[in-house]
Length: 281
Image 1: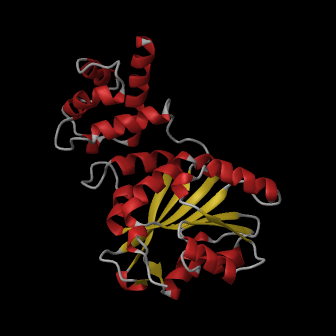
Image 2: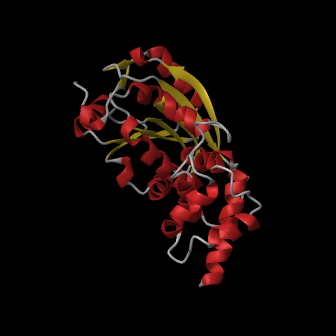
């Protein structure tokens, strides 16, 4: 079947890489696996042999038909949908009711299309309460950005959001020649293990995202100027002159740049913003 460029399809065909991915997941018979974008089922078949139940979400209807034909009467639920249109928490809860013998947190495995990987990752992190971990195939540069530490040039919005809620680690790289059609970029396998207990206390998840986006909106500017320029998008009740006081209360020097702030410092900044906005109500 010809890959559809509009869906960003590049099918993994290297069986050695398939085996490495499945072995790294190491799913158990009492676990769910959610596979996003199963394609022709190269990884799906192997996951089904390991896990108690696999939920495969595929947007391409022709591939859904192929999967249904290849894996009848198996431990597989095939959902024809865009993952971004699904309520992941609701999906997992529904499947848990159907299979009460399995653990109620899922393992996620995905070969994410490059053009939409950020949106899907954000949605997965939002649904982290029902997720144990994620093993994601991403464009190498995106994976490096997510796993990058503070102070690194690649450290940014994705780094802060992912590392606040998950332990992140790049497992291995995947050459472009392992796919058909061959993409123009290389890939990496990234593991994100959701923290069972929050390592960093966040008073408001949505506010954190707004602050981090605002802080990195103008990377070359200081954190003071970036947040001043973004204060209205963070909350209409904020004024540029509020930012100096907020940074002072958070013990963050106004001349620093966003990429130097740790996840803990962004959490503290969110707490101070939250206090300021609560007082303004």
